[in-house]
Image (cartoon, rainbow, N blue to C red):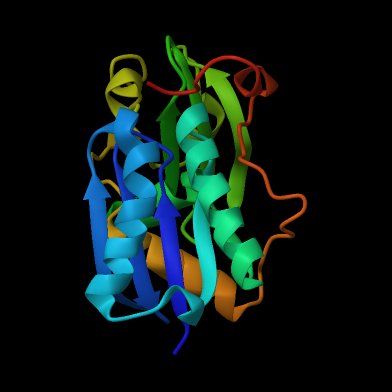
Length: 224
């Protein structure tokens, strides 16, 4: 068995799951963002109990490293690193942008653009082709009607993420398409096991949330 605990507290909805290779065994969801910190550790205990597993049977822990809510990312990363240190097991970090792109991939035709709300008219974003190769590297972007025009001129782009509504009101290009598809528990399981199988782990000593903007490390959240 290759039991992996998957932790995602990056946005409003928190998801944790226990998986064996690419098979999800059980999962738990919390819809109340302000409760993620209090909810997480009891939820992990309940998850292991539901699966009939012990915490020392974990082969690795995967965590959504961001970008996303400053507080949410800190909560998830701290829990993941604590378990990995205690059990001496590897840590796997998953990009929130790649997670949303993976969820929307079946609906895309040419490229995928996840957009994560960063308040006001700003988003965290990247663009990937159908092979998940970066066409636009992860960045914070202030939206306007000319955003993404270079790629939209030649390719159909599927926008996904919790800021899709914001983008839809600004970008009205004929090659722009939108979906409200969101990552499900299985989505992170696929990504985390792929990294585990390829030995793509993160050094515990240097692991930290991927904020994208240094400002968010100081005194505010990147998302509501």
